[in-house]
Length: 335
Image (cartoon, rainbow, N blue to C red; front, top):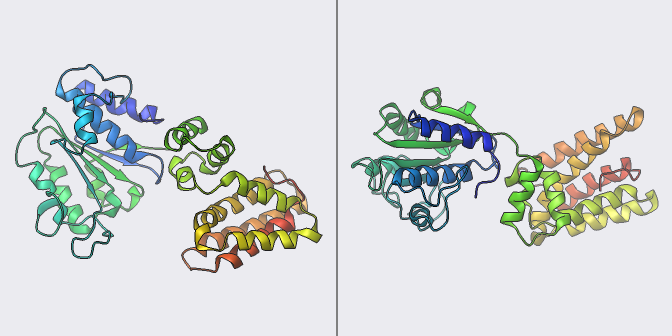
């Protein structure tokens, strides 16, 4: 079941039910909002509606799991649905960096049938077929130009659901062929519902902490679902509240605990959470205390932003950022 994005669901449903469905939709918004989940749900709903019997089709994009269309899609065997995404290179076995031209027009170097084969006959199970592209940002120039030909002369009964995290970087000709459907942050209640559905064993404390960290982006929260966010927040709050005589030892202990390979997920979560903690503290301060906290946040944010890309030593990074929190703490960091 798709969670959130009610306005976007209503827009696409209304277009389909009016009989004036645009052939290509640009699902635009930052990564982690659930655009791919929306595309899969929309594809299932469209193909189920087009197949005829309405039993098992509910509100929004809800389609019962035992609906024949849902069964076929879950098994990866629906003849009228194709997903274009990055695939392993058959020669090296490693994931390709891009969606390549052979995934659209050739079959000699890419696993599976190319997209062109989908259009060599009419839809098999209804009057519609759906192509999900996840994502347009990962298409190389040749693949994008090949797709553009399909968008300029769309085969009858074809719906393209094109995901983009950075639509401003796309070819203007691609953007112009699509109807844009913008996605924004979810409500906290929807993020919480996503976490409950995807990680049902998560503690309530961790779920609350992840909702706060997500800022409306459920994929961001899911990325750190196993990182023990609640405990990490408590560690940072305790560090901020610690008297100077003990803060150095606490800072070093935290740095050591996040420096090993087994702590990679918690380390990345720290890089997100620590600057956010300083930013939250700054909102409650005035005068010199505010100036000190903003300066600390700026330093922590710069260091955290470049830590992974520059392959900086995790223990040194944590020690410096945690030290900034200890310096400006005074016990009023968010719990």
